[in-house]
Structure formats: C-alpha cells, structure tokens
Image 1 (cartoon, rainbow, N blue to C red):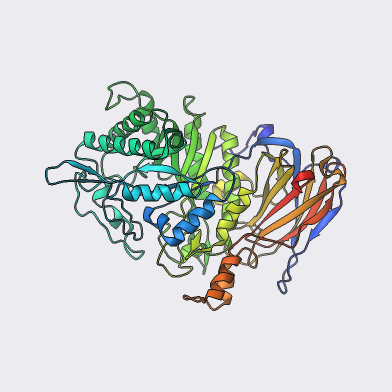
Image 2 (cartoon, rainbow, N blue to C red; image 1 turned 90 degrees about the horizontal axis):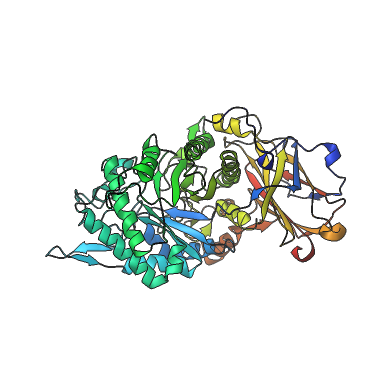
Length: 584
C-alpha cells in the first residue's frame, strides 16, 4: 500500500481549498433543478478550480470497452451501440472481446462466443476461416472503433483437453462451469503460433499495416485464475510463441499483457515481468520477450446489506494501487503504456443478484465518475503511464429490458452510465487543479471506500486553450444506495486565460440524475413494459441520451474567474462546460 501521508508533487496535488485571497470575486450563476418534493436541506460544498495550475494531460483513458460475447457486436443492438461508442469523441475508441478464436458456429450466449477461425480436416491439416472474426472487426472499424485484440481462446482442435468444450452457463450456475476445453494449452505450440501468424498477416492484408499497428495485441484473459488451465510456465511459453508470431507478421505491433485478475494477481504479474525481461525465451532461446504495454484487471466488490446495495470501490482502487506500485518498481517498465484491461464495479457482467442492483440506475454512473478520477490520481502519484482503463460492459441481445446485467444499453436503450462516457468525451486539453471541501481523500477510499455520513462530492476539470473551453465534471457519490442530502455546490473557477470571454462566456450544464439522462426511471414510470410500443420505445431512446439542465446561460467573467452554484443530488453527475470566443 502507498504511504498514509502523501507528499504529492505540486503538479498533481489536490491541495486544500484556495484561499480567499486567491479566489477572485465573480458573479454567481444559479443553475435551477426541478423540484423533487420535500427534501432535507442541502449541505454546502465548496469546489475550487484553478485553470492556471496544470496537473497533466486530459488523456482519454476511459475510451476502452469490452465484452465476453464477441458475436453480439454485429447483431442489431450491438451494431447500434458500437456506433455510439465510436461517436464518443474525436479520438479512437477500442473494444476488447473474449472468444475471438473459440470454436463454434457464431451463435452467442451468456459468457460465450465463437468464430470457428481454426479447425482441422480429416487428415489433420489446418483450416483457417476468418469470416466471423472479420465480421466482428469490420463492425468495429466501420463505426470508428479499433480492436484491442485478445488472442484467445484455444480452438477445440488444438486443445490438449478439448472435451467438454461448449458450455451452457446461466447466471444460476457456478461460475467455474465456464472453464471447459477452450481454457487449456495447445497440443502443439507450433500450430498455435502458425494460427496467430496467419491471423495477424490476414489482418494486415485486409485492414492495412498502419491500421493494425494502431491496435493493441494481447494474449488470453486472467491467466492467474481458471481462464488458464495450464501451468504458469506453460502460459509464459504460450506468450513467447504468440508474441513472436504477431511480430513476424507485424513487426511494429504493440504486444503486451498479462491481463491478470486482481491487479498484480498475487505473484503472477511479477513473475511474468521477470520472464519478459530476463527469462529464457521458449522460441528464440534468447533472453526476454517483447512487452510493449502492460495490462491487468481491477474489480470492485459490491454487497447487499440491510436491504440495500453497498458498493466496494475500495477493492477496485486497491487492485489498481497494487499493480501501479509493482510497475513503478521496475525502471524498465515504468514508462510503458498501461491499459487496465477490465476496470469495473464488480467481477461478472453476465451475473445477476441483489448485490448487483446498482447497474440500471445512477449509482453505476456516479461510481464511474468518482472512480475514474481516482485512476488519474493514482497514476499521477506513482508516475506511471496510464493509457487506458477498459469498462467491461456492452449489451446483451435477446434479453429482457433492464435485466440487471452490467451493460451500457439494453435492447438499444442507453443506460445512465453511458452518459458519463459522453461527458468524458467532451473533456479535452489539460487537467487543471481541483479541490473540494467534501472530497473523500484517496487514502480513505483505498482503505474503506465512501462510507461516511455524507458522500464524495468532488470534480475533475480540463482546460482546452485551442477550443477555448473549460470542462468540469462534478459528482456526488456514496457506496451505500440510500437516500441522502443534496449537495449545494459552489463551484469557483479562477485562473482562466487572459481575455477569456472578454467579460462574458457561455455555460452549458449537462446532468445525470433520477430525472435526467436516465431511461431507467422513464421505463419504470411506464410500468416497466417488456414490449414497449413504438412511441414508448422512441421516448426511451430520447431519455437515454445526455441531457442538459436548460438552455446555455451567459456568464460574466470577472478578473479571470467566475462562480457557479448548483444543487447536486446523491448519485448524480454534472458536466459544466464554460466556453468563450469561438468555444461559446
């Protein structure tokens, strides 16, 4: 664990609130919210944004997504959602999927998918068929999304233990029932390597070398648990063969791993690093193996206590903390890109249960806002190169509306959490200093989460000088899904560029709460229809989009600063966009 007292570098510090002498007088703007009936008096929160204090790049680490079921991507609702992900920002979004080499006819099911990329004829000759995997990647690329290529799982004809192979898991079954013949090592490492080589070469021929060099290529999933039924050394051997095959077909490919569960995954990540840096390569006999980026997984641990959901954000952040700490201890690795290959509030997107009741509503969206901000903070603290944090959530075809899966949309209707990513997509430029009187300190979140009488009310801000825009995402999060007081936030902005707005700017306020950007509450108000009428469906589609709280407002900028006041209900998220000049 990191020290209790943090000597945070000045450029990354979230220090105490700016003193009154540093906060210039400004004209406050009250952003109204609809009346919600009798409520306890809001508690005051002071948030200070100093746009003159740079703390780092507003890197879009959030733009990674994934799912167990690859075939959903080209089904009707999957295509729609992939398109929405591709529209989140001007940069490339990425998608990671299991089962890209799994044997089968492409029929999807929960925690299952297949492409039949590799089979063997009666004489044992390899037969390659890229039809389905091309269809998956074509769907991504035609909609502005790039593959984060997961090389796996083991084709039936190559598995050392092929039977049983196809599982029929349901949320009522034991999780371990998914681990069948696809999880085993190959009976012939040379044939496996040739499959990987042929696939990579085919991608280069189909999509172009430059395009494929912009992808990420990684082997398998969570090899430190049941997803890998071989030994640790057998996995390192498989990695050597895989990395060599990819690089032979595409020398500049970015190949990495190890995609461990539980952050560093006990000793697995360390031993993997040692193998890649100093071990004997199983293919070349030389020292080490290619390692262009580093990846691991981080999951929260929600529970159901006293009749309500209690989130476990501390567990997810501790996974990240442990992995970052290990990476930072290797001078050879500290500067390499890191992608948290799955980063989620819980460990199973297709599972159901009372402890997972947070998923349809605003608890998931507020958790996402608060946890992503801490990922940036942890990366700053350790000085590591966080490239991405992948949300393992997509959509499930042919399932009931709002069925309780961890997903971004249900039957083509967007969930509130997707609107957090729409907010992130509007943030660009450089992160700037933020402090809040109601932020839960990172050390506290690592130890216990957000369990106090009041929640975590804080913000993250970005200044884009080229776009002439300051964006501030503000959240009110608590681990417990219980009613609570609103936060009466005074957002004081100082340090704007000289001449920003020439005394005037435009402010736009986007909101996710019970009555905004929330199709779930609209669906419940309709009576929870499982066969909505066309009119109801159209209304749900509109309700799933990111909404604003009223029209844009003119704001006076005085002395390079301004002030905004807003009421923020528990489990809600706001994005305040302040533009001037051409950015208005």
